Image 1 (tube, helix red, strand yellow):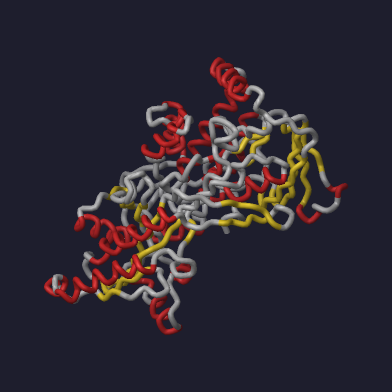
Image 2 (cartoon, helix red, strand yellow):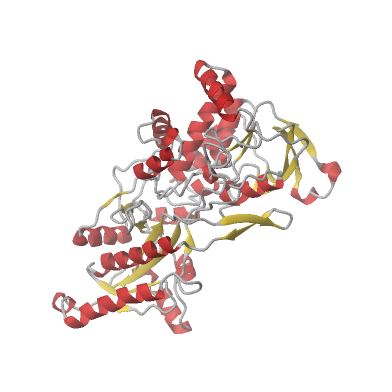
Length: 496
């Protein structure tokens, strides 16, 4: 569904719009990328423009039943939480709960109804179902050749398109590395450093209907543990997604048929708190079938495992103090079920306190082992990361490939590390910033001249020279991924 839609990750998504956290920007600044400093006006302005254009607000948010439970549990534990700004026009609508499947009514202001609509209204064209090859000559991207995917093996079917300005790749963190690898580029950061924001969950059933699949999801976020158990900024955020029966079927542990059926039948009473870990460890993405299909190799780092376990225990602490909770469990295959006490007096009983400790201990013992815990990928980032030199990154601070002039990557793959927050705003803000730079340089404004001088100094003799290098790229749509919408917008401005 995600890859079958234009604007992909900003359409098939929640409406949660979190800024790039300050501590993440400080980390990126310390990596030599000063444009991300918390006080940098360029990135701050780009983020403000994106949020304004997409109608992002934290005012008038209506919390559904699940988010109310998260608030209740956080307040009783004195855990820090805040409203998650939304780009959903009306969070009170029941249909807002289906936004994760793509909002057909336009209630969510994703890329499809903002950037891409403006691009289309100004004469922009879309081409989907194509095979694409990017052509380079003497170390510079000069154009593309395209054909229908079904004609990929017929040389006579390919048509050449020469570009007047820039070649921009926005294929996302799984496909952009494949595109570059097929191009013959060998920077060690291409396909490496893949971050996935691994996610697991603690779930509970209530004594009354919650209807967690209705109303806007993820309108609150618990930030109490985001600094991590080691205080290094690599901890989890706790959030509430939509609890659709089909979605929960993929997350619930299977013990036997009756157990699984009973759990699914209780979906209207279910609350889920996800543990979204900012991963310090990374994986890789490589290609199979001639480099067109991504293969991800990712094993959680021991430091991430420690934070995930802590996050699960804290999510349990949140849910167990909420009123009307009946049962609680995790996504562990062998996780015992916690039965909530029947009264306040029973809650303080020795038997219940022993059950609480046993449940927390079981989380530690079961851990994050292979095939023992339902662990999911929330976001893909960082597989062509930005760096101040070719050793540190695949692209420079403008998003231009270190190995090739005129070839830009503008999507979440350029993140230096994991964003530690739902990355839609970060991704679009980077696109806004880099797209604005391209326009300034193309139009040769005063600022553009400064940017060009910086580029010449920065790149110097570092750009690798390759003659006649061809690369192949198969994507379901010519513009793909979260950044596709933004790139199309800027391509039109550049007059490509």
